Image (cartoon, rainbow, N blue to C red; front, side, top):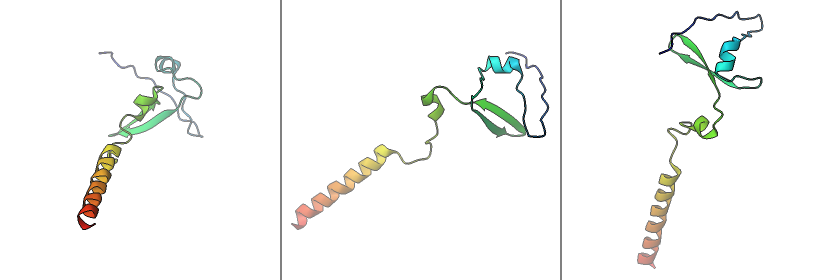
Length: 89
């Protein structure tokens, strides 16, 4: 495991922080690269946006209703209505 080096930067009056060149090169941070700011416990973490669109979307829909499940439920309800219509009709 790589031993972490301490690097410092000063926050400007406008809230700007310059990311050290070593880190920009290592994490391929180029002008226009989007980064996320996350709070993890007492730490502020800066995470570069993923360039792989599949990886970037991984987990974004967690907790949402599965479209497959919704379709199956809709089809089951449709089948039940059709069977009811056949019995009544």
